[in-house]
Image (cartoon, rainbow, N blue to C red; front, side):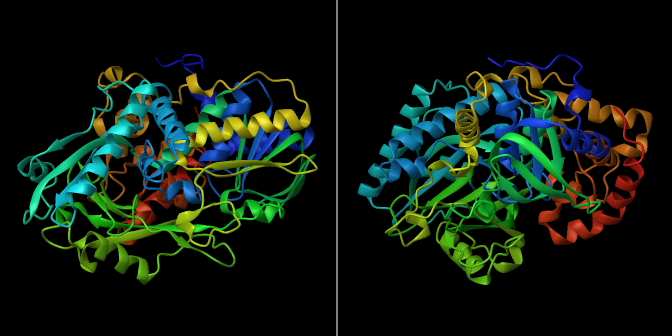
Length: 524
């Protein structure tokens, strides 16, 4: 069941735009908030929503844009923790299954779809390994049942014959294929859109969402920040501070020691990979519980990932994918496909940095725990690190719990397990939204409002560049209601056109013109 706590017709309450940002900056300069969240990724946005839904006054500052960092560089999976089960970490796998259920059945069913996943059984996968893989899948299904996710959302796993495996993933190598293991998990339409939905829902509860505002220094009483757009400095006073800056958390709280790990993905041609609606999960030879994933995307592309490599030294603003990672990923999936993917099939790439907590005695990035940690400094700053996208809600709730304890605030327990995000509705209702299916997949119930923009100006229904799915109406919506302040915010976060450099370049002039046109006339 979905609980929608915001009043009907609450678009004004949840809209993020330049005018609201200016008003929010003015307000926080004159007031003291209960909770200041630093970081506008999925964990920070989740913490802001958690605190605001408890009735606390909240401000969130983000140095760049919502989902600027790791939160837009994920595999876009909402998963039940197969890798955790493979490593015997049942507790983390169960937490993942519970949080997956929350997203898929209560808070964001409009943003998460059911994803079939095929593990091909070639001769290189021994019968013993097949039994182990099947046991992991069935253990994961048991956790799915304990989390009360219905089989209509995530069907139970099963073994399938080779003919069915080839029908689901035509690109699989037919030679030496004896069948496959078919499981099911959740997949986000877009990880960055989840972050935007969280931030807007938090705004609906009164949180002030302030992007392009960099925290220079934080302490138990607030933060010294600078408006990146004007250069103005100010002090935000707060009764509690949550550091959710991800891989940059240690720069604000030096007592937190992190060992970032790079997860690289390649954007590839789905037709060349022979993949459509079912993903391909390829076990890594000789590495128990580690897989390479080939994940279909809604736009006819596919993601190939991912690596797990330590990243020493300074944290880059935008991580680059080294040539060694490209070679590794293409080689890792080569034997599973009938026609190997080559470099000419790679359309783009991206890498995210996991904020893993330093642990003594752990040398490899893959050995570091994926559990999240909530640390409270002597002066009361709460830092939340680790974890993963699927468990963002639990991470945010734990961080706010710690902030409430540290500061003595009066607040009840977390409510976010039943707080529907903007655009959410039961799956059966989404089919009744009067808008094209691709719009509904991105905006949920708000898709009709986006489509309505083109009713007043038919030109807004046109794509920003031939062959692209992003329309002019969506650009205006991003500026007026989703907090986009420039063309990069639109191309790289509110849509994912930026993943393909050529497509980004073709769309940029039109998007820049639309953003310039929309910013002065922001309205509801």
